Amino acid sequence: MSNYLRKSNDAVSGTAPRTRGRKVWLASGLAGLTGVVSLAGIGVATNANAVGIDRLADLKWSAAEQFVKRDGGHGPDGRGAPGGREEGKGPNGEGRDGEGRDGKGQEGKGQDGKGEEGKGEEGKGEEGKGEDGKGEDGYGRVQDVLCDPDRLIAAITRANADNGGTLRLAKNCTYSLTTNNGPGGSGLPPITQNITIKGEGATLVRAANATQFRFFDVTSGGHLRLADLTLTGGNGLTGGAVIVRTGATATIEKTKLVNNDALAAGGAIENNGTTTLDHTTLTNNSAVLAGGAINNTGLLRINESELKANNAGGAGGALNNLAGTVVLHKSAVVGNRSIGAGGGISSAGGILDIANAEVNENTTGLTGGGIAVLNTQLTIRHSTISRNASIGGGGGISNTAGLLLTSSTTIENSKITDNVTNGIGGGGILNTDLTPNIGGTATLTIRNTDISKNKATLGGGIRNLGGTVTLTNTKIVTNTATITNGGGGINTNTAITTIDPTTVIVANRPNNCTGTVTNCFG
Image (cartoon, rainbow, N blue to C red):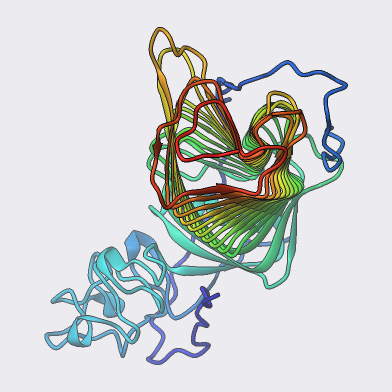
């Protein structure tokens, strides 16, 4: 992984202008409760004595305030205290203390338009490059925060008042939070501006004797950036650690979200806005209803991250998507569990795009051990769906169309292997149209993919119930159906005729296909 954090210079140059007084801002407020997200899932009645799953696991926030600045910060009216520039002078002069009204010289610039590290219009310090004086991360001066939760609360309050800022936490410190801003609220002030928090290996934890609260509430117009931080022990109605509201943005990098839980949805994160996860892990989080780690109704991007060992009482052991958009690339969804549909990932409506990913060893009490989608556009490319298990059907993947709508799953250049289910079958994939005669379509398109070593009562590789299936250059081999003439490779109740000659369906037990399948023999 690339090193996200860049080490700052410890020394500054130039003479120090006189120091101005600084106010300490304190604020508190009530955070609104979010509505409980509507959930959707597909349940299938099963026979308790059906041939079973031997791998399905049991389901079950001193003295005076001190702000330490690097190479210049803000004085009153946006002017720097110690200047972050070479003498703070421009070619045509300088303002008072080396700065003009907005932290600029008489001509509004230092030498060549920048300070030592460069300043923009607002005249920020060492890391204050770019438009509006934004810092290295794009927002505000860098302010070090002592290892004290009260200092962190004050720093966030000040950053909001200053229209944004960058906070650097004490290295490896544990900030133990004890109070929140109201019932169902957060342990830290709402994020209303553009705020970056550089964790430096620090941990935010809700104290053991504290009332329940999450850590961060990012409100509309706010943008929270987190890096190199651990969030643990948070609890909220939705979003156990972080809630990103409609119109808000969060970017979370090299961060761990561990042992957080939600009373409804989103054990670690509730995203109703735009959230990006990069090189981040979400582990052992839980939700009573949906999305053991994440519940999404907005735009969610997950890159080079891991969702592992999370749990949901309803849908989506790791991730639940409700009519939002999820882009999951180069990431792993491993060892998650749900009682409802989608042991790893569940989606009802919206778009789910998975590429270069692993969805492995997830389990569910209903359908879709790895992935369950309902009326969703699902695309899987260059990925592995392996060793997942379900009770209801679709050991690896369940694609369901209902309510006269369409659910389309396209799989390319992937492997669907070693998944298992009982129930209505489909060890690798279950494709179901609930309203085939009155509208709606469950569409399954597979290209250049290996479907092998899966096991089910019916349709060891694929079980199709009223949907449409298209196979191109695909291998369906060594799958097993446990019922006589159950179709080890494919079991379908509607004709599957769109199979190209390069597709191979062989060596499945007890037979290759049950139902009408073009180019399938035995």
